[in-house]
Length: 174
Image (cartoon, rainbow, N blue to C red):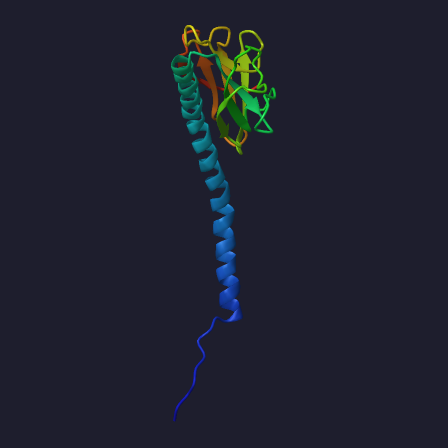
């Protein structure tokens, strides 16, 4: 005699499996977000260093003032938008704003998810400018502040008068 058997999960097996998956997800999701927050915090220094090297090299190659400024709309400089995106452009009239006829060299979208990035410059100007004559950030020395929202990783990234960057750990962001 031939007996046909269906292979399937019972309701109890399904409930147990879903319960185990729910427990694993509850543990894994916060750990994964913490990992992503640490990765973002570690990569921000390298992104800032790269964009500053690029701006400095372009000021030397083009013999023009090059400005790095924050933006939200990807076309104009907008103060306090460092966490969203950066513009790098040739500033021919030295007003630190993108004007008609000035070339935008690069747009970098950061879209930080786990932290905030701010700039505090020596002259309270919300941008960094590399001068055509010296290729140095004259009047633009200051610090970037990265404050993590998910972890205790907070950084101060100092831009010196000579254009060098260094990273310092902060115990808190205020």
